Length: 75
Image (tube, rainbow, N blue to C red; front, side):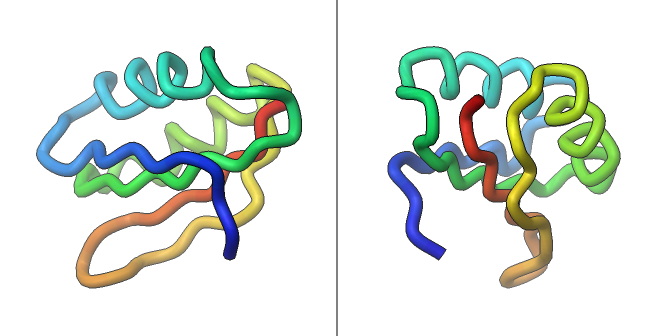
């Protein structure tokens, strides 16, 4: 999937992946896609809730090389 920016949250524990994802999205334009890589298993539920609460779209979530990968489209 194409993306405009990437943020690596590997090694960060809750709530830091979400806090830093929010910060990464803040300087992006509406419609741009952010790729987030995380190692915290809790980030799966957290990312879904974050997208729902903020109006951003979670385009996909999955695993890659034992890490969680998310694609968020900025509202």
